[in-house]
Structures are given as C-alpha cells and as structure tokens.
Length: 220
Image (cartoon, rainbow, N blue to C red; front, side, top):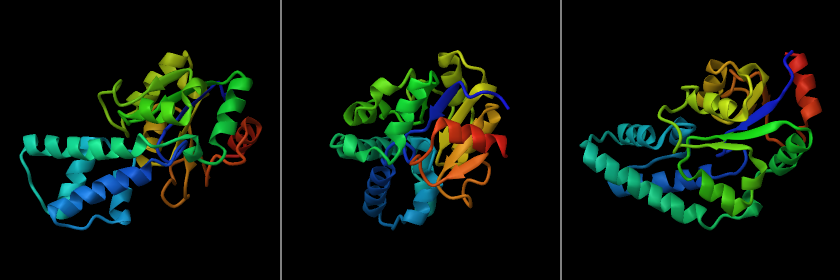
C-alpha cells in the first residue's frame, strides 16, 4: 500500500458545516420563485457548482429562464450565502477536523484544500483554518466541477505529491468520484449508503488519526 504523503480536503461538510447556509440561501430563493425546496432536494446539490446547482433547483421548480436571469439569481443566492458565512467563527469547525489537520502537519503530511467553493478563503479565514494548509485550490482556480478530478489533481501538483500517495476527504458522491478519477484513495465523511464509492466511510473526522487511516487502508 502506498504511503500517505498528502491529504486533500473538501470544505463544506468535511471541515466546517457551511452546507446549512447553502441550503437556507437556496431555499429562500426557491420560495421567492414560488416553490418549496426541501433538505432532500438539497442532497442533489452537494459537491456541485453554483451554476449547476441553480439548474437543478430550477428543474425542481419546473422553471426555465434565460441565461442572464439565471446569472442574476446565482449572484443573488451567493450574496445571501456570503452574508451568513461572514458571521462564522472557529466554533463552526466540525468535530475532529482541527486535531487531524494538526496531526497531519506534525507528521510531515502535506495538506491541501480541494473545494468548488469560491468563498473558501472567507470561510478559512473566519474560522482560523488558513494556516493549516500548504495549498488551497478553490473555485477560483478551477474550470471543471467535480466529479471532474481537476481540483484534486491541481492540489496534488501544488503539493508535489503523486496521486497514489494522496488521500481525499469528501462528503459528496461527486467528490468521491473525482478522487477515484484522480487516482487517489478516498475517505467518505457521512453515510456508507450515499458514499459507497469511497475506500473508507466514517461519520466524521472525530477520532481519525494517521495511524488508524493507514490501518484501515491496509484492510480494504
């Protein structure tokens, strides 16, 4: 089994819970457009770009709009989301995330962010997580959305790490697929039912250590 030399993390739902703010902003937009957008509907948006998410939302509402109007609505949704995340602080870091980031650094494992979010720096700065990353690849650096492997391949490149030595931490099926396409191992954060493509699935980063990770990969 290849040694773990780099860990690449998705942001929303893995390190911090910003997914709830995305949901609230999308739900508010749907209500303005005259239909209900449920938490179950929101599952389809996990790991998906803003433009693609809007298309899914409009499909749910049975609404067709010109591109210019869609661009305006996507911007409106993002502005609301930014208002919410501007109030975030370190209390919103998910259990185990900070401890694991610290352990990776103490053991010489490189750490990168691989997120579709264009607001990643705001979140990292507000929660105090920025110093723990050797590289940050977010939505401002990529042209293709997950499940395209671009974001993780760019992360590995920035860390000078071979994909076989990288482990991706993701809470979305599209992200797990992107990791697989990048030639990397993956840890799903969530339920085995929705993340069946991951090499390992855990409920959260709480209790995860580098040694346990190596042991788990040795047994799959």
